[in-house]
Amino acid sequence: MGRLKAWRAACWLLGALVGGLGGSATAATPVRLQLNGYAGPEGAISVQHSGDTVDPYFALQALLLAREFGLDISAYAQPWAQWLLARQKPDATFDRFCRRGPVWAPCKTADADDTLLALWLRLVDSLPPALSTQAPWRASHRLSSEALARLMDRERGIYLVSPVYPHGLLMDNLEVLSYQAACRHDCPAVKARSKRLAEAIHTTFWDRAARRFLVSTQPEQKTVAATFYPEHVGQLYPLLFDFQLLGLHPHTHYRDWMREHRASWLAQSQHDFAWGLVALVALKFDDRASAACWLRDSAHARGGAHWIVTDEVVQQILQSRAVAPAPAQAWCG
Image (cartoon, rainbow, N blue to C red):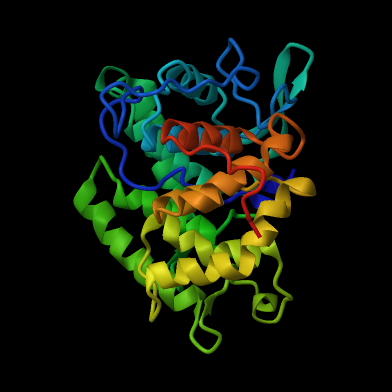
């Protein structure tokens, strides 16, 4: 699935997790997340509604986003964490899984080890102490941290996708940075690494001449023709993490991005994936009109081939914030 056109886009991930795995970051009585059709009784969470693929990246992203924006994930978080822990490989990495009858069997390697390890560590960090202090979880945290450290490119100071794909990606490194910024263990050392990583992201990915972020360390990124993913999405992704922009004001950058790419984004669900993460950036910048347009224009895709579990979570987050679909007559171009 190649990260489903790389919904890298984390957010797993838009700030520090607070409290236990089933708690709420923003509301005394949070709205309960509903993953009917995605979550199975054994704890697995599929990428698509009634789907036959589990990609741990998307399940982790969806749960962490839901919790970050105040939804109650207690019905799904611990069963999913236990399910995935039982399938972590000896080198601490994860596979993707396909359904074989009633069984979920490994069928592909992860699309990217660096960001998946960072998401897993963030989830483990958020476990209730009664669980996280148990030996299997402590061992998983240690092995996962060591595996992530091995992916560091010591020369450039960024993380590489995997030992097999030795290049670095902007969005992956922002997700690792987000994990480091929200550390719960060994924080002085992690915070120091976070500062160095932020500086390395600027040095490696910011193209001063073009005034844009490169999305990869691959040489062709300087000349490749820009497409919605990854180039255009990559310019918006730093805003998910409050990442400091060089010479750009965040609100101005957001406004300019929407002016240029909003129509293309809202049309994505007709031929690609719905890209609900962009609607969360709109919510973050109090652009409820754009979020409402996304709810309206992507409604046809809900539960279908162009809709993934992260989109489902975004839809429920927007509903919990009283964002309703734009009226049929509203202009959303």
